[in-house]
Image (tube, rainbow, N blue to C red; front, side):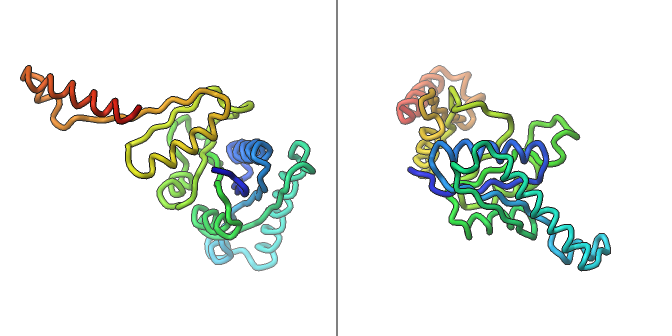
Length: 216
């Protein structure tokens, strides 16, 4: 598996900045092209919700485009990367997916939470990240914390479905020279109710052993 094109999306928040830096690190490692995008509200939303006229909307879009250029210009040794930027409009998750398709990206990188990250310590996902997880058909990397260098340990959670092979391939790539742990969680139906029967307990133990063997 190789990564030739990476799309990193930012909302100019600290979480978005971390996503861009993660995309840069992978692009350096894989010698991949990197495109940095920002999803802005569509013109009709801005005009309808805030009553902004076209000149002000154009100015806002221009400022967002300039901000993307500044993000790209601050990258460490940008001359060593094939970097481009783009402003897209629409529902953020859909606009990012569309931009990734047009760029023929092998990987989308976004922050696990966006501009509202500092407002809550909840460990869940932001709205755009959650919609991307549910809706994008492309490989997606959610960045939560700053990562210095390659990870020492990667945990791959698989369910033994056909997609598990792809999960393993991505996990191997992310682990690089680090450690890779493969994890499969299996819940035996009605296990709590069957525990009273010795024979059922033995069957449960055999079932767990079978599933463990399939994971090795």
